[in-house]
Length: 370
Image (cartoon, rainbow, N blue to C red; front, side):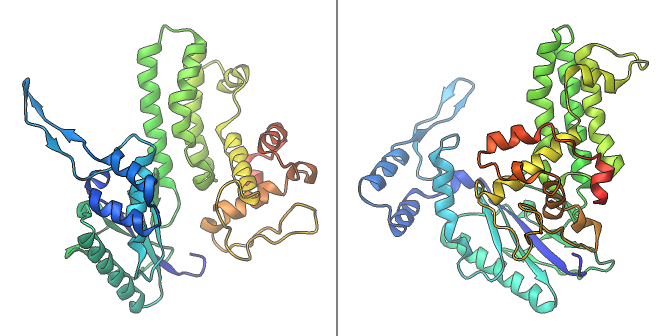
């Protein structure tokens, strides 16, 4: 985005994805992947002889054999689904990312040729879906242009003969993406949803002891405020305060102090809660640590991690626009470089996390300027 380029992303949605997988075709793919013999027979047995029926007002229909679908709620089900759609990228020229039934195909758009290539890829996806009896939920498949251009290149894409809607924001893997990757819509959304859950807890657990209330907040509210936070960690004071406000309300609820004369920061201090901003900094450092130590399978962009003269540190990435400055890698490098080398060298992730918990990281505004 820093060089005024544009990415056209097509977010795909399968209709009843896990229920559509035909058993016979799945087994043929397993054989193609080299899964044969007893293992294949065991999976065949796992899928076979399943029946279903419908109950209406106490009346039961006849049993019907289930010839498609992988069992949801099982460990094996998602694995079988991924194996079934694993070849969806055959004959595709654009990058495509698959995660269960959430898929996205995208391309850097430099000219009309790139638009046409992406459209050609959508036609290939249609061909694949027809061949393997999978169906796209067209109303939920959308086109999201990502760019900082004031006048983006607009192109009408279609899938299965139906024009796709062009949107300014759309959820993907639990995060709401927008055209400029500002995360503003996502932060507003999670603050609103978290406040609603907190309101439900207040109505339900009002008379309960503080430890019960605190457990409910930690289990039901805070995870919503922190899901995938290393990616969207906000940098503006407004967005930071928007999220902290939810935790402030939770602190007053837990301590049963609703008078405004009582400072919320004092209540949070007595509870021993770090700010959400500090927790996000810790999570960002932990995620970067796991990437560097190959604990999670993410490959940094080529040339991004350049070692500095300080052992264990990296040269801060120079960026032209805020979207890049506050994106994951540049910000994570700035955080990482504040950690002493003897801590960055720790090989055990649990020991590393314990070592950074009490480090005096700068305030958010200072950190953003480094």
